[in-house]
Length: 130
Ligand code: MN
Image 1 (tube, rainbow, N blue to C red):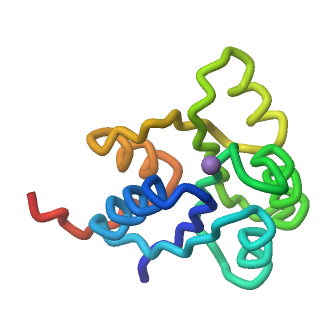
Image 2: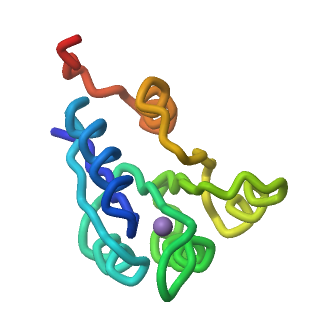
C-alpha cells in the first residue's frame, strides 16, 4: 500500500512541486492549505508522514505542530517542518513544537526525496523511471 503523506502548504507552487516529486516516487499525497484543514485530515486519516510549512495563514506551523503532536499522541508519525526561514534558532523552535526534523526551502528536487525516505520505516519500491 502506498504511504500517505499529508502536505500542509499554502503556497501553490511549493505544493505543486512537493506533490509532483512525492507522487512520482509512489507516495500518496493529501494536501491541506492551512493548519486547521491539516489537523482535520490528521484526525480522520492514518498518515505515514506530515510535511508542514511553517509560514501559514491563521495558525503558524509551530502552533499546528503542537496541535498535531497532541492529536497523534504516541503514534510515531514524523512531522517535518518545511520553511524558508534560514534564521538560526528556527530549527530548535520547530523541534520544540514537536517537529521531528526540518527541511529548508527552496525545495531541492535532487535531495528532497532522500530526506523524506529517511523518515519512513521502509522505502517505497516504485522506480522513478530515470
Ligand atoms: Mn507558506
